[in-house]
Image (cartoon, rainbow, N blue to C red; front, side):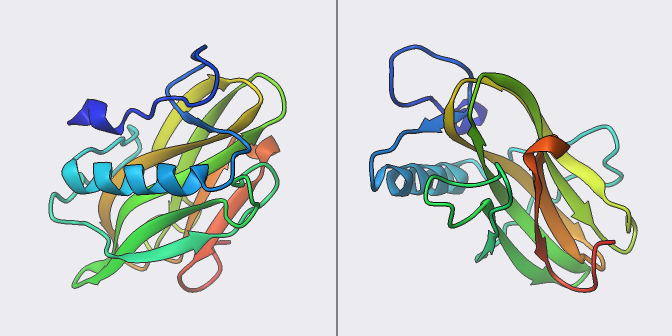
Length: 177
């Protein structure tokens, strides 16, 4: 199941990395989003957590409410309509964040570390809850991070591909600071 979330590249037959490349064909991103959604339903327990994670992933934490992360800089999909999206839901202990999808545009081949950062009562300066490093060529790419955690006092979830590419945030409450 974990392999199911490994996203294959579309376009030319040459592979540049595990993230999915989205070409300039209209509607292609919609098909990619539907495939990701189906994969997430089939493999809900996948989680990429960093050593700084203080609490383990909650197996039952699946987001059901979609939310769009605004596009900022190179954190954008081909239509520049979003920098990503996530699924969340209220939980007795706070807000459950299920999967976070991040879009990144590359203008040239580069190595960037994509990160999901959560700002909460316990981590007001932010905590990296998922990350992955990619070396990719020119184009648009996306990756789905399985976060599946409950955050007490969640104020924002941000996505970035290193600071020079921008930081896009979805605010849930007071400023993430």
